Image 1 (tube, rainbow, N blue to C red):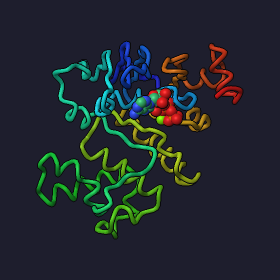
Image 2 (tube, rainbow, N blue to C red; image 1 turned 180 degrees about the vertical axis):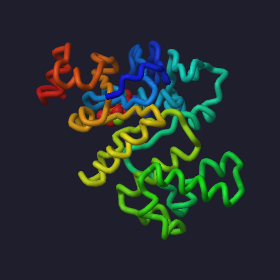
Image 3 (cartoon, protein in one colour; image 1 turned 90 degrees about the vertical axis):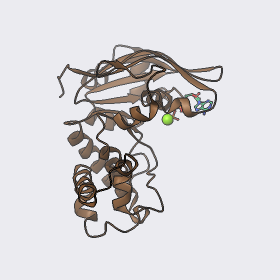
Image 4 (tube, rainbow, N blue to C red; image 1 turned 90 degrees about the horizontal axis):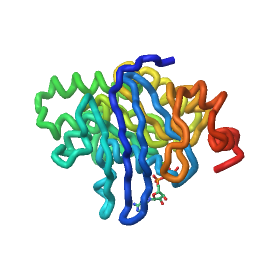
Length: 256
Ligand SMILES: Nc1ncnc2c1ncn2[C@@H]1O[C@H](COP(=O)(O)OP(=O)(O)OP(=O)(O)O)[C@@H](O)[C@H]1O
Ligand SMILES: [Mg+2]
């Protein structure tokens, strides 16, 4: 259990809109360093919108905007003078459906972020690829076929490749939106093990519909309904002794 209270990421009164539609309503939360933080709640309650605000992808949707503070290492990264592209290097994201670049090899998929940053030396790129593929627990499975297309891998391997790609630019926070929902139980278990390793270096925020998964891997869990955070706390408490009746209804399957 993570009891590290040093803050990596703090969200203060975050709101998000799609046009007139108010999708995220005043979320405030602290994510400690080296912790896994799950977000659960019924479909449409704003989980994806919330995490997409954290790395400033939400604002790429036409008509979408957000308000509130997102404080990473003491700096409000939701301020207008902050370049969203630089934030996406510090806060990486992995999506529900593995999305390796189809025309790129396993090697190129892993180091694309570094290349875009201007790193050119082959030896440096090779070293980075090995480091990240090892961190993503994929190296042993791909080390003899680094020049095959990323899309030639299985779904679970592709998802670990996407995790390696996110890690290559050395982020401090990793956002994961239902990262195992398209995977079989064995591939899901691998990603869960991997997340427990990754939290030694990264703060992880993961959206999941799988309660057992949240209870197993997350130090803290937040429960959302209709854009609001209804309850937040240690997973050990949320899943055994929730304080709010709606949380209890949801985790016991009576709601949602
Ligand atoms: N591009 C969009 N334009 C307009 N409304 C949107 C858009 N994307 C999401 N919404 C709305 O915002 C609300 C929150 O959606 P969001 O995708 O964040 O939910 P979610 O909790 O991630 O759901 P799920 O569990 O199904 O993935 C929903 O009412 C949804 O219809
Ligand atoms: Mg979603």
